[in-house]
Length: 102
Ligand code: FES
Image (cartoon, rainbow, N blue to C red):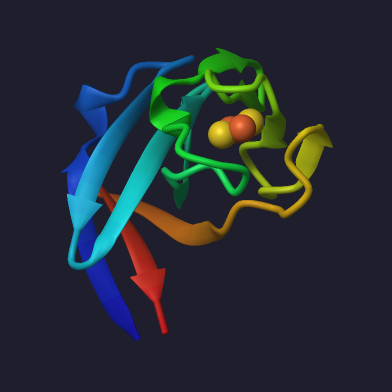
């Protein structure tokens, strides 16, 4: 297992997201009511950045074609996206946000 340090928890306030590059990954770190979730930043439908999307509760809307994903599960909430976005096991420790990958 590998642990990647993404950002300070303070950098992502509730209802917002931050785009982070870590290793060869480009990720979106979300804060939903004080809980942190991490997905791939790239929309599965095209070039949209989910960290730059519109967040409503636990749903993020891609700002390209308005497809929606559940931030917690990665599942598609609304088309035109068809493929779920990858989510990562997220850990917050000592004020830092990490993901754990295999
Ligand atoms: S690129 Fe995200 S909905 Fe099309």
